[in-house]
Length: 79
Image (cartoon, rainbow, N blue to C red):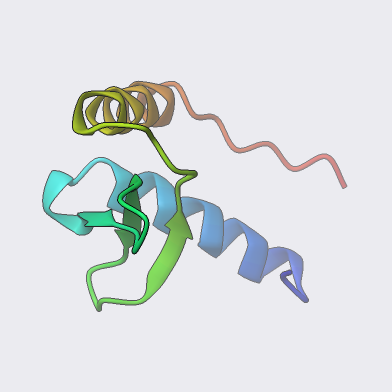
């Protein structure tokens, strides 16, 4: 949770900027062989973790959907 509006806006911008850069998406495998990905910022801090996928292809589709959604992202201040 963000404590200030400025922090929330900065966090949103960081996710949008980082999510457009494929090298900041780390592909991973759980101990029970489920696939997932982690989004990091340029400093290596984790911004978010996906749910799990049953195979690599579904994980790859999830990454592509994330990147398409980010291109459409529009942060609005509703406060």
